[in-house]
Image (tube, rainbow, N blue to C red; front, top):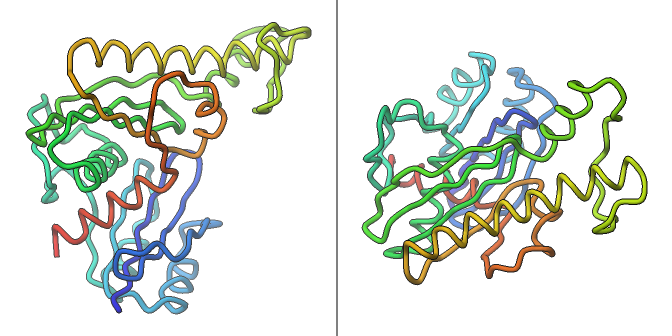
Length: 241
């Protein structure tokens, strides 16, 4: 049995998935990116391999510790990936988007796939049936929209996400919840519809920590998987072994 650690350092949280061969065994939320934290995870799980996807300025010691104790790979534009990136400036593609696309290709090969990531930002990532990442779109995520309304107005409160809200808000909080969450739902459905007009038999996958707020409201058929980035990281790790 071979253990692989897949680290995902996002703008909101730092996380790690523990895989035994291809089976996801555990998800770990990191308190920080200190050497002690990384060493503790390594000591607990004795991994042979590790991979890091990071969109933040993490501590240099993270990579040093992983490289010292495992066969380590840092995901970036020079990584070997199971799809092509015929887009301008591939070095600017976020590591999280590369991981999402790798998972889409691994789970749904030879299909037109729109892979949507719901995190700090919402990313729309299109992979063609020929395994080409052709690009997509980026828009503000849910928490960013809540913060923007609070910080850029004099009186609107900072609203905490909540699944319990009506279509027609009856106070400031429920108006904001309805506007932001249902607004994003309509954005996602609208983007999916636009892609469906262009590509037949479109496969749609959805992932991200915020996805449970939106999935019940979507009219389009989707495949939802909260661990899609981890599965993509595992596929890339194996591709670079």
